[in-house]
Amino acid sequence: MTTQINSNYLEKYAEDYAAIVCAQYFSSRQYMTGQDIVKLTNSTQVNFFIIKRLFELWKEELSKLKSSPYFDYRDITVHEALTEFMNVLSRRIKIEKEQLQPLLTTAVEQAVQLATDPVAFYQNEITKAPSGQINEFLKENRKYYKWHHQVVSFLIDKAGFGHDENAYLRAVSANYHTISESLESVNLLLATLGDVKPFDLDAYLVQESVEPTLIPEPSSNTEPNREEESKSSFFDQVETDESQSKNVVNEPVNVEERSYVQPTQNNYRSSPAGNLDPYNLKAKFETLSYKGMKGIRGELADSLAINQRFMFTKELFDGNADLLRHALKSIDKCKSFDEAIGLVNSRYVGELGWKTDNEPVQEFLLLVYRKFEV
Image 1 (cartoon, rainbow, N blue to C red):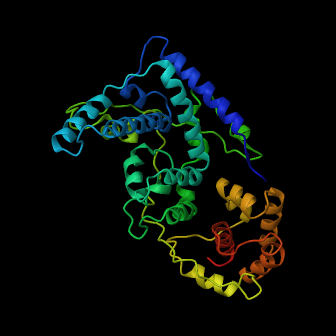
Image 2: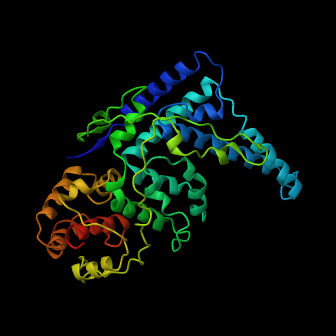
Image 3: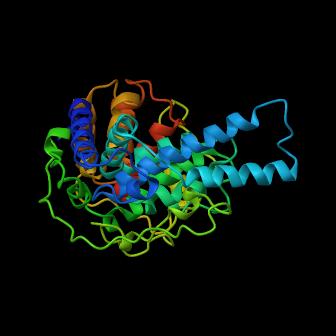
């Protein structure tokens, strides 16, 4: 069944959610502090996405100060004084309703996107990293990732990736398929929004079946330590144990050890006629070290992440979702990988002008391989 995202529904839902929360909070208060934001809603991820955005704005202000040509910000005394000032400033967050409401709206949209499609969300996060600093970026921001963080946290400090953005993007997708069964239920995560306004997953993911909604039990919240304000920023100390936050979904078993190892460079050969060679494909995929990679049981269509479905439809099947669905059903009927590749060659490679060494084609072929060979 084809899944379409209803972005209009999400936009309206997030606006309504933010309006309700702000109206309730500011009915008796004039402004909100950083610690108030940490426990603002029952959705820890929403709260921390607001903090994440404030952290980004805080860094932008610091960059503006350092951009002045009239002062030597490399001087150790200036550096220490500026750091102390910025840390104290971060602990004096003071936001009024007009400033908070758009931040909260965006945070809700991001939380829903992360819950429903963690691969696309974290791949987009990686593209935001400064050039050559992906690892540093993920390490700096991981405290703000509360949902499905296992999809990306295993990449931090992993040797072998270097600065190759494409390697990180591939790793996120591959690792998701390895650990997807251990991740929290989408409905369980989105249920944390329900005390403000129930989220209709059917209205957001059109034609997608929905699991029964489960409501997590609330737990107590403890504010972070406020001592030594000048030595550490609010953003350094904002990382609280999720078990101390309200209505936090329990973590699954740690699966970071089942990590993805960077594949070798794509070097398989096509046949002289330009078709894919199943023998070379198998040799290539057998060398990939997807530690714990599982085969696909059931229909291929059910194994696709939302971002993969969109990518394959757009990049490989001329934007025709029905053509993708028909291709997956046809491959499901094949009895072997060789037969499946023969079908792909005869119906799609030439007819749709696939470049056999590009990323979408290889990701599609890997799924086919996992269907028959893993």
